[in-house]
Length: 291
Image (cartoon, rainbow, N blue to C red; front, side, top):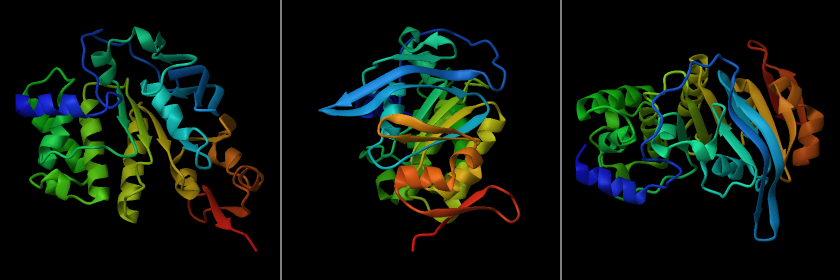
């Protein structure tokens, strides 16, 4: 990856996606279940609207947490507060250390973010875009290329490697950026946080499940993964933990069976569903029961 490409990328990509500065050198090992993110009294007001109202929760290692809720209830805003895109009103801690005490480059090795859309108009190849994820790493160009190739295989983008990024479909771009973020986290070991904002919105059926299966595998390796979604049935199938946000607050938090109940869906979405167990795998399946 050329120095010119690195310079252009650093000048154009959102700061919440990539950080670069010197910092601490290592973490102590964390047990699965340890709170990788701790949030206390997060509040956000935009204009005259309260988006988040003193939200407190934690995100644990080895857990796939899916955030649900109607449009405009603060799901994406919560992720943007965690990553610093919105100013912090409240307290955020990563790995038992206050967010403002982290050197950005070191945190970038352990906290990866995939926003709803990533603006990149330069005529880079797919391989170059994925390799940009290696900028925070302590690795040479050859090692970064090898890491990027592995993550392109995981996201089914290896066959696109020589294509120019602007020529891709929306779903292909989404998978390329996921490969880039995974490359960024290549040196995180088990201290890995992945925040994904609607990562399946542009994907076909097969790639939706491939992406969520990959997220699930990462939690099996000790990562903490948080995904904003709208598809309740996909959430029911893959989540270890579901949080529903409504009107700036977490109104339900627990396992899919605890949260995705007929009463909760009616109360939050004003929509009638019937909930039954999947005949083979046992997770909740939500069916439209509107008259």
